Image (cartoon, rainbow, N blue to C red; front, top):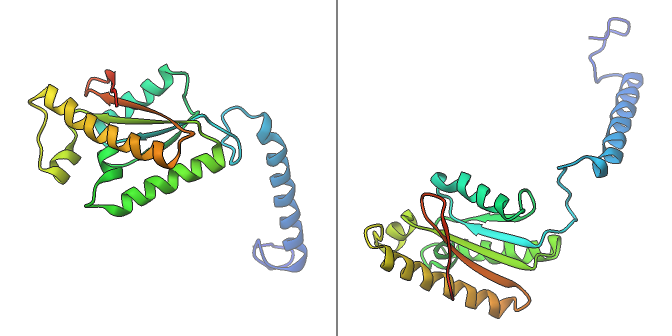
Length: 182
């Protein structure tokens, strides 16, 4: 309570104007400093890369480390769908595919991406849930099945967005990444 006027902090004409001016000045100062502060996210800038990866918690640190090893730390857009390429393609969750395409369009419009990196991973539970496949025991078959979905998504991206370069990857649970040929 304002002891002098018997009013709360945001009541009364005089205090309200003063509070507004203080907040406006603070906001203006922050706006002026934002361009010179390192690591501040900006809505309009640009990044070259959009990453699609799986939601699997076991790999989030490996995914971030991999992107950092490519000098892309905090310099890429990221879409997360269970199954990565499978999640974008599955008929069992058509809204996921729609969301994927919407995110690609927004990343192109807002951040001017030039490349889509699609990173599937081994021992992916989405392949069990959506396809009934437990591929973990057969590394060659697992790589083949992932390769099929990755290649199918790449073909669709190339058809819809011929200006985008598409890179296909398969990550092991140890964080090792293999390039996948389409």
